[in-house]
Amino acid sequence: MTSAFLDRQSTVAGPGFNRFLVPPAALAVHLSIGQAYAFSTFNLPLSRLIGISQSAPGDWTLKELGWVFSIAIAVLGSSAALFGRWVERVGPRQSMFVAAVCFGGGFLVSAVGIHLHALWLLYLGYGVLGGCGLGIGYISPVSTLIKWFPDRPGMATGMAIMGFGGGALIAAPLSVLLMKHFATAAANGVFETFVTMGVIYFMFMMVGVVTVRVPADDWKPAGWVAPAQPKKLITTANVSVDVAWKTPQFWLLWGVLCMNVTAGIGVLGQASPMIQEIFSGKVTAAAAAGFVGLISLFNMVGRFFWASTSDYIGRRNTYMVFFLLGILLYASVPTLGHLGSIPLFVAAFCVILSMYGGGFATIPAYLRDMFGTYQVGAIHGRLLTAWSVAGVLGPVLVNYIRQFQIDNGVPKAQAYSITMYIMCGLLFIGFLCNFAMRAVNAKYHHQVGGKPL
Image 1 (cartoon, rainbow, N blue to C red):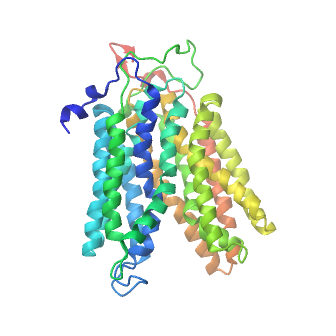
Image 2 (tube, helix red, strand yellow):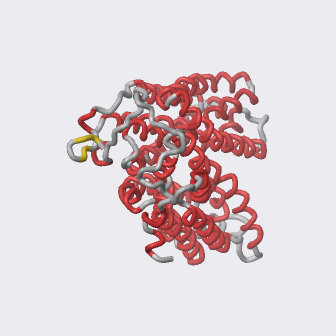
Image 3 (spheres, rainbow, N blue to C red):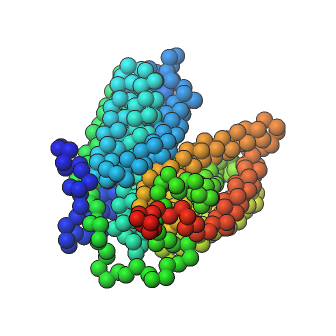
């Protein structure tokens, strides 16, 4: 593949190009990197590389393996922030190609670590290299999609980011199928599965690399005219990335995303044991797995539904719904558990996880509304550091408070109640951040020749 093919100029679409071909290109990348949500599928097999059927002396522990996912998510946020400006400069094709190399290569380096039983190579491969693929791949299509769909930015980003939420629905069964296929009496097939998935995901992401296009500078959707009087919180000006994060609006949105993600990600990681412990004796492990699959589906669908809805009711109003409805639902969970109402409990968390996913998909359009399209991908990259913080804060709150409760004699069925009320408090902080949102002061607007760009 020549460098000319990867250049931004080579991706400029010609007249008559169908803009609806761009979301599937973005989806090819996001469905691939969304595998990260299914990494836990490998935890038990990786802890039995020596013992095969059960852990043996010398095998890695689940505690050690838990760091692989944590490192990947931390690197996702930091790499998105670090390379955001570069992604804007080189365009989606080159950045998506680099993401494919990093993500696919991360599997291959990890496979070497599995073969040599070197845990540091797993941290380096999937955690660091794969994490870079996650971060760069996540933000690569955002700016391009927003420019292709100035009339429906929420819908456009929702279509792509939906793939990240749904990637696990493909990756989990694929991982199990491959490990079963490659398993022998002397090995559980994890090494071969990592090699195979690295190749598969690289090739699938390359579909997006080949098909993605950027619009010409003067392109507009047929028949669309930018409103002469934009809505109150939708700017027609632009703010550069280095200026954006000096504005109060950036940090308010950082708080909005961090609080929304913290509330959801802690529950997502503990969903299976939580429902089994709250409804002890009534929910089997198989039923709990079904619950995890169901809320994962709502996490995916919510990304498209809520982001599309935000095009009609506005981004600020959409987050108002997330926070106010979220507070109501989290506050009701202890009561639903006490009443033993499994259907209402499941329904509450389906809605909660739909808003968790919707928060991810709506934030790029919110950034576009506040800061314009000029460097929105780079701004999005820096904002994703909120995800890195939430990825640590959410699980710590749920897991440690639960254990503290149990250690102090609280029954397991009631050990999540305080956590749910704390989540309500976090969502209220997010509500206040969103309520305080105002238009960016004109002094921050990017100037060219003395005029706003």
